Image: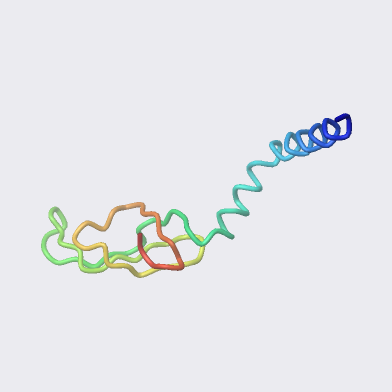
Length: 87
């Protein structure tokens, strides 16, 4: 029983130490994760700039530029899974 409590205490202390490094860990996970937020980089559209009809959208994310077809919407920020394309 005492050794179980000591192991639990050690685990909790280790997790507590990691909390202090949450920002660098978040950046590392951003670049390692196959899914993540992407920002609209370029778009092709027809019609007027006030009421465009999008044909193609390119998004910039941690893994580079991804060409997708979100026509006719092309949102400014999307969540893209690099393994499957747009989601």
